[in-house]
Image 1 (cartoon, rainbow, N blue to C red):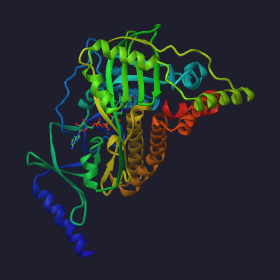
Image 2 (tube, rainbow, N blue to C red):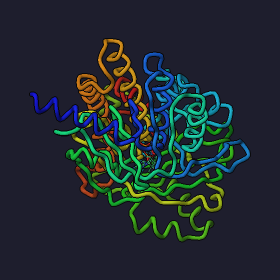
Image 3 (tube, protein in one colour):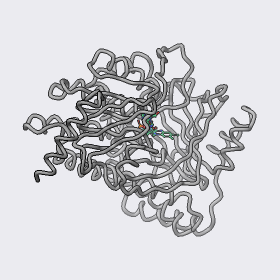
Image 4 (tube, rainbow, N blue to C red):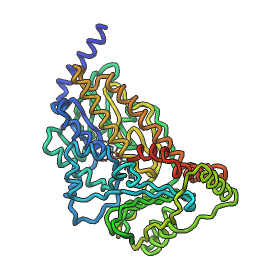
Length: 450
Ligand SMILES: Cc1cc2nc3c(=O)[nH]c(=O)nc-3n(C[C@H](O)[C@H](O)[C@H](O)COP(=O)(O)OP(=O)(O)OC[C@H]3O[C@@H](n4cnc5c(N)ncnc54)[C@H](O)[C@@H]3O)c2cc1C
């Protein structure tokens, strides 16, 4: 006991003579999640007096977002809980007054109109399904809020080493490549899917590659005004989705094989647009067992008086692709078995990475922030110091309960639709028809995405 006390005392002594600046909290990673987390801590009445440092390894993005800028190719579908968080920290007003597009209908289908899933705000599931916002606009609006807070921010700062509390330290020490260092009571890792903080925690990380690339682009569309429908088609190579940006433009996320992705990036704009239109419109070939299973499913649903939409699917016609807007991102799954350790916690993609087919990645991260800030404020109000193990454990168990089922359902959806095994394909089609016909199932699905 005495030697432990001496070790802690030594560590404190070492800290005080090391000259390292001391913080209560250091947030490592200034993407959408890290920046919003810093702002949420600073805006919380119980936590606002904590000393907080946000470190971003990249340069500061001086976007000065305005309506005049061309649309960015990186956008997110933001659900109402994420919107409420951005509202609470004062960033939503700027986002809304710059540009955002409301999605009030979502049409998801597979090989044919037999497997159409249609979600509509008129069905009273929600007033709005989601908001489409450019990622850079979220960071820009939140950064503006941060500027009037007491959070210190370091851009272009590369971390060489995180020293987490072990036998000899009671604080986290962060050493930079530039030779200087800082120390803190709690380190929050928001440094994305390749998280260095997670690696320093030495925790088990379950991950796999989808052998798919996500092509993003901004496209000009011809649709009836207002353009408020999100479209998504499941095909055997992946998914292709259009998210509305304005009456003229939509944002594309096309998950496909690495080979096809490579050729899509190299195509002329005209060929790319043709390939995209045909991906949305071409009837996919179905073998006889699948057609027969679809017919049986229709008859069974009819017998129970459950109806499927008979509306034809008319996806928007893509007119052109914006210059230099095409880009590709690798897609994978990742789950950190532990979100927390002594004096450290992971939030956002550093803890969990999912396929973008359901547009939920950043929404899960915003959920982590709301949960963490609420529990940290409760813990401090109860007299505990920041980063108390009980608070960290509660955060981990609450968010793993929230995130893991969503992650696994999205992974399953992707696998079922890409499978070439007929029974699995039949199961996928039946799933679509069942969800479309049975309202309570549909309502549960909507409550998870909006
Ligand atoms: C094609 C595509 C489409 C998507 N669409 C949607 C959608 O519609 N809706 C949705 O909810 N999600 C979507 N996502 C997922 C979403 O983009 C991610 O979940 C989100 O960007 C994660 O944010 P983050 O801040 O946790 O991580 P990141 O965005 O990866 O940010 C991490 C930040 O940390 C910095 N960093 C890295 N290492 C360090 C270090 N050691 N020290 C300091 N800084 C560091 C990086 O520079 C970066 O700024 C999509 C993803 C893809 C690929």
